[in-house]
Image 1 (tube, rainbow, N blue to C red):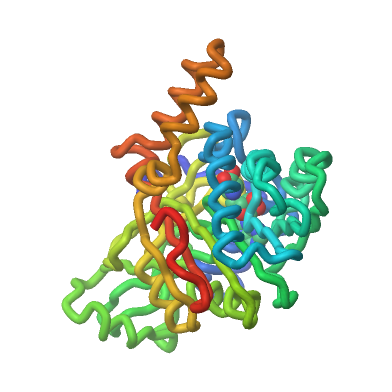
Image 2 (tube, rainbow, N blue to C red):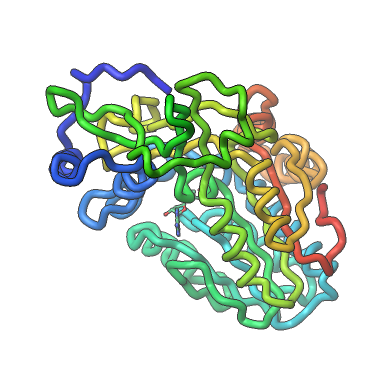
Length: 367
Ligand code: SAH
């Protein structure tokens, strides 16, 4: 986490609102605080800004190279084949951002005989602003596209899900080890009315973390997204039909205590309490925790692999060479994009990929 200079803090409209709430009710659990920073209807980061891309606050893999979405489209086509080429079939994306990944994926999918015929695209997006961009970008794709703002129920149709950088904002929360045991981490106010980290009321203990991390020193932090809710939602969504999902995100493959809560505003890191509502807040995803919850819910898990390994196995190099040969004027740009996605010290190593599937499917392609 970047250092917190309380004097750098900004009394954004949301900061004022949350301070009033904390003054009235006492410390607010971090999960709720982050939820407000991202989704407050009037001031939340995702609720009020179209944040992704060069002009936004951060740039994602599909915005770096069209090959990313194309490869995921072809991945979905192979999964569809593993499912027995069903028609109809649903292709979901969770958190589609500007809609770029899906547009690229569908362009690749068009070349796969049969897949497009029974295909319905369904996008789960909670931001109205991003949804408007997606509608624009996907206006002419030639398949039906529908939106939902929450996890869908089972439609009794085989389903394939793509999700890039969705997990890292899916209800992150933290816990902290105190004298009384592990408690939820919370945000309170210091003597001068500035935000500060604290712990939830001692009645909100988390004894399961004492079992997980018996030797953790005081002050240790453990963080997760809402993996349990996610696994339950996927289980409901899958029903008894073939189901496969691909999650790509920054994170680590083993669970461990640690504090990775980060804020990004205008392509720069800042301390997460600096400008509530005006920065993206996220954590590194604990893929081991996600995998555990999926298995408890009765789903199988493939991976995690690094993004570099995964895209390598899907043939990114071959695809890039073809594209460069077909567009010599853009060869440099294409090569730079692929290098960025694959860099072992950068996205290629920091991002991990996990596959989740119903037990009636074999190991998913690439794993
Ligand atoms: N996948 C895109 C965008 C990643 S940013 C890309 O790679 O460029 C995260 C996306 O998830 C945004 O579209 C955001 O609005 C959406 N999102 C985050 N939490 C959500 C939730 N709980 N329900 C629906 N959409 C969500």
